[in-house]
Length: 103
Image (tube, rainbow, N blue to C red; front, top):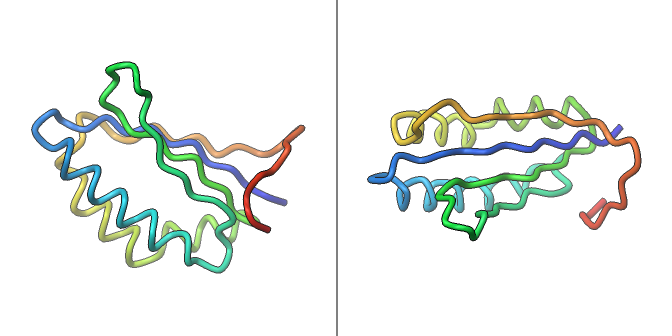
């Protein structure tokens, strides 16, 4: 069953660009993972300086593999000090979803 993840990250103001660059690198690497079916980065556009990820994986094992990947661990190690608080991550299971991601 497809697993979706919604993550919000609030960078410290002085590290906004650092987080942006690190997230863009993470996005590129994650999109190549075998079980990843979508990994999109957003900002709110209303003055909110946070970043938002909407992710999808073919199953929970693929999501767990993502969290174990070297590029994810490298990102977490780098970005930990750059964030105001721990990322808010929600793992979601579809009830009624029109998917626009690759399969």
